Length: 111
Length: 111
Image 1 (cartoon, each protein chain N blue to C red):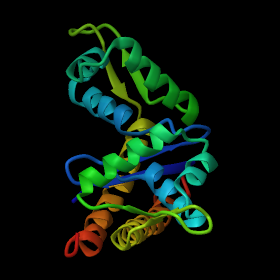
Image 2 (cartoon, rainbow over the protein chains, first blue to last red):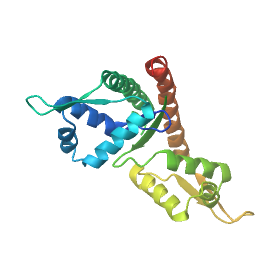
Image 3 (cartoon, chains in turn green, orange):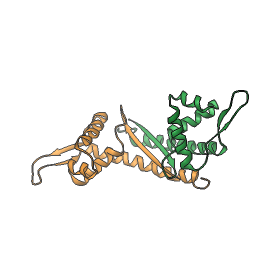
């Protein structure tokens, strides 16, 4: 027996979950939005859709861009975006830790 | 800010979650499969699909039927089905309890 937990958060809608989190993590990794969604096999329009939905719902920008320079600009997470992502990931980790323990207790022996 | 948690369990696939749980709870309530799916606005084919998927995946019957008698037969949960449903619900309740606490800690003040 195994389990799967999906955790979403948001204000007016559940706009922040696994998909946008993976995208933000890849943006941090590559300093590039297009490299991030390509890495995930995601289209540009889908990436913008989930990012805009999250930003509109949360009420603050997750991303900022710098233009020009040697590499022709880059996309980064805003400070608030970084903090929110970290808070969400910590929240998920705590739940997953407890879920693992509780799952063993509930289903480990009999089922 | 609010959150939403979906918890699914299963063996080869995540066959047991919110939908089949609501259906089983309604079967317990009405002693009838058709009354249960009608209460949920669910079609007969959809109800059988999620029940069969869960039963095949878990490897034991969730339901048993009695035929005849004054009311022309009824559908009940098997003993194993009842125990499994209770175990799943307890597992979810523990996670939801912890999630509520952790959510307050993580998002209660700043966000």
